[in-house]
Image 1 (cartoon, rainbow, N blue to C red):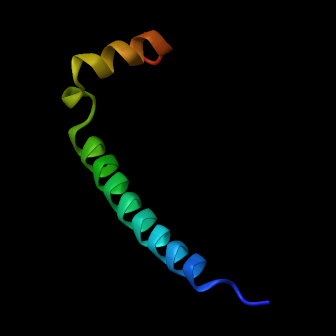
Image 2 (image 1 turned 180 degrees about the vertical axis):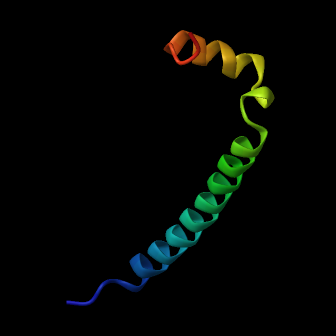
Length: 55
């Protein structure tokens, strides 16, 4: 039983989109590490305080 061609095409497209998203996420994560907490926006700080990370 073969996988339908259309399904393979959609799957390949989804894989490519996942790779692009992962690269973008990784880039943002590394930039955040480099900037550190000094670069956090006020909104992020408020969320972190609400979550109890910044005591």
